[in-house]
Length: 115
Image 1 (spheres, rainbow, N blue to C red):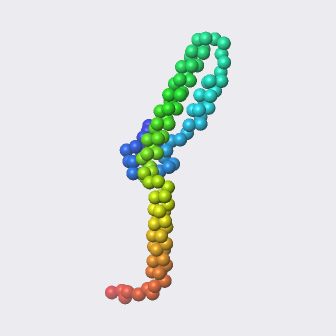
Image 2: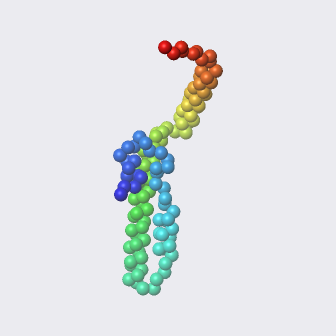
Image 3: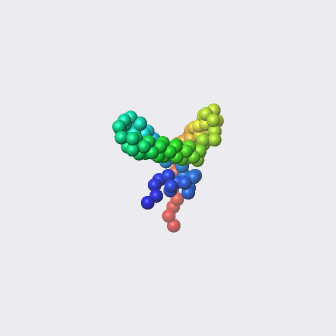
């Protein structure tokens, strides 16, 4: 079964912020918990150390995957000033389209006789 991120990787034009996997806290919590353990058995320490290393590597992979997903978001290539300018342009277009819709709604309608 594919997860959402695998489905969207094939269609990068449909990426949204909600599709970016940024669930890091559970993994960070597990890493911290494994570091806080203080077993007296040396074999247990070695096993816990290996588990912690695996979790850290998993976190690094997840962070890299999130970076890649963020790079695929539309508009990420623009800086904040360019984004604000684009937002102003889009708001102006929306205002003009609303005015046109309002104008056409209030126009007289002509009855077309049925043949």
